Length: 331
Image: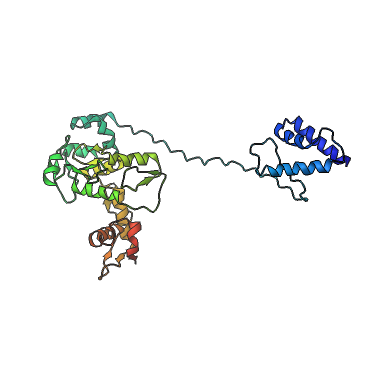
């Protein structure tokens, strides 16, 4: 019994020493001032009942452990310390060295009556400016049109407006401010409002009726510039864009620069996108439409998408390959 008394005395002293005032107060209420060996078990029982009557666990108590009176021996479970995993470091983007534009090239751009700000974009298109200077010729970018003009600011704008009906074509969506430069451009833009995606990324477009989402804020801001009609304009025609890569491909069309060469048949193309589509011909894969009675055969994914949009729009208004590929069989 002396062991019990000594134990309780030790607990009381320990609580006072550690300044666990709340827990010491609870123990003091059930331990009489004149403590004796005869009332030790009774005191412990009263203390147990007192704790049970609280009917709830004390939150933020200074008691760093639970007292379970009358319980049998059990294995002690120690809390497992969870290590905080440091967030994965994003790969550092390689800083691109600024393109140094030779001064003689800048002077040449000025002589053509163009803006000095466009010199960098023009220089990065790898144009053979020696030949261009001698010929002073620029081409219309509309497929099948062979019109050419001398090089000067807005030299093809009147031609595109009169012959190809380029101008201002607002998006019909009331929540969008985009204005296309041609019927084809606004029709391509309309699909953006109804596209379905297999993956949803963190940064979502806030515009109503647009389901687009992006991995980075930079991509989202570029997308929003289209909705807001905050776009750049070509130096030579009415073409408008938001991404520099699109503009560089457009400039290559103006100057007929074919620097993307197929390593299988030596054909050349003005953009990497055209080269990628061309490679599908070498793969020998055909896409057979299962909705056509004559089982229409398409040579590329692009042709299959166009066929589906033209002939089977009743089945689905969406032309995303990830959605419509189930209607085709590859052979």
